[in-house]
Structures are given as C-alpha cells and as structure tokens.
Image (cartoon, rainbow, N blue to C red; front, side, top):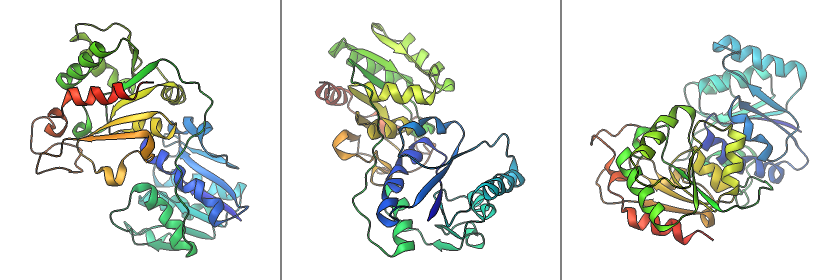
Length: 324
C-alpha cells in the first residue's frame, strides 16, 4: 500500500496534521507513506515522522491550475499511489490530487471537490482540527482511531531562556504595542532570564517598536525575521516556556514539548488550541459577549479587547510558575 498525503499550508495546521500521520500505521500497517508540503514550511519536516518521499510544492514555480496539474503529473510519472489523502479543504488541492492519478482520493466535501475526489465526506462540526484530519481515516476505513499523538521529535537540550511571541497572521489574534509592552515589562521585573522575541521578517518592525517603548530591555533578544523556520523550531524546543498568541509558533512549541502559555482572543480553543494538554495553558478573558469569535479582524472594537483586557499580572504569574 502506497499512500500520499497532501499536508496543510499553514504552520499551525501542518503541526496538527502530525496526529494524522501518526495514525496511519494503525489503519494501514506496513504502508509506505509519502507527503506533499508547501515550500517554506517544509523546513520543519526533519522533526516529523519519517516518510518515503517528501514532495515540495513551490507556488512560484507551479503557477495557477496548470502548475498544479503539472506538479501532480510529475508525481504520477515517478510513483504510483493507491491512496491520496487531501487534508486542505481547497479546490486546488483536489486538482493536484486528481493529477497524481492516485486510485483513491479522499477528502472533505467542499467547493465541488467531489468531482475530483473519489471519496468525499461531510465534515463533522465541532471537532478539534487534529481529530478532524484523523476522521478522514475513520470514514474511509470504518475503523476506530487510537489516541492522537501530536509530538515532534528533537534532541535539543533545554536551556535557560524563554520565548515570547506577540504576533499572529490575524490582527484579531495579535497583541497591541501597549499590551505587549505591559506584559514584557512585568515579565522583566519578575525574572532576569533571557527572553527571545520571535516573529516573521514582516513582524520584526512591530517587535522593535515594542522594545523601543520599554524602559528595561536587558537580556531581551529580538530574533524576529532573523531565523529560518528550522532554526525557530530549535529555539522553541530549547526554551523553558513560551508566552504566545494563538499562532503557528504556539502549535510548534507545544508539539516540541515546550510548555506553551497561549493567549486566546479570536479563535476557538476547542477547535484549534495547541493539542498537547499537559504542555499548554490556555488564557482567555471570557467576559465579552462576542467571545469566542473566529474573525481575523475585530469588527466590534478598534483593537481586540478580548486580548487587551486580559489580566497581565495573572499571565506573567502563570509564565513564572512554568519556569524550571
């Protein structure tokens, strides 16, 4: 049995798909598993379960529908697959699946994807995304799953520093400069441990702005935009604890075994919280009638009050408690 899995395009979703990959041996013992992953986030694959082939999809090279078809056909010419599991919900991922010529193409029903998939299932509502992915295996095989495992493996030793992430793709999940300054100031007052600030290149300016408004930035390093994704994973794996917004790095740190204190504003933690419960602390305000919404931009307030009104002293106390 040869299985090809199209993995999700976003970092957090990619990490959550590890639960799916870890379940495959239960459903298909001795199967040969290969994966397709988007260029860029493929850098964390060394931490993933081992696979036979790792096809890297570059959107800048494979442009538009023609590029998707060409990419799929190139795979078809190199290998024959019995099953193709399509984890993203997009129509384009189903186009790619069809082009590979896999005998069975399995995914969720959406955007007329059933025209390209051989097995298209309705998505169950209310599942955590880890279980949502695994449910495709349950639907297809009519077997029960085993307990989900979303763990990334590494040999990075723990070091004497913590990581702080104030960023997120969505503005409704991102800390304001004022809130970030408040939290970091309190954290610096409580401990002199080294703090590493992380973020994408486009987020470095926000981090710089926050640090410029702080009085004491001793032992605070701004690594935003200065690391590859693989280097970021190593930083997260070696940290004592991470304070973060709901974001891809939150999932990555949690899967690497670092205790992750996650500030939830927009977003539903029952569906998308970092999966390993023993290695996470979820903090939510829970005082606004609009919570939890799943909007990327707050439509009620000028800044997301679900984050702005969080009790900073309680947040920092939680972080300090998880320092070894």
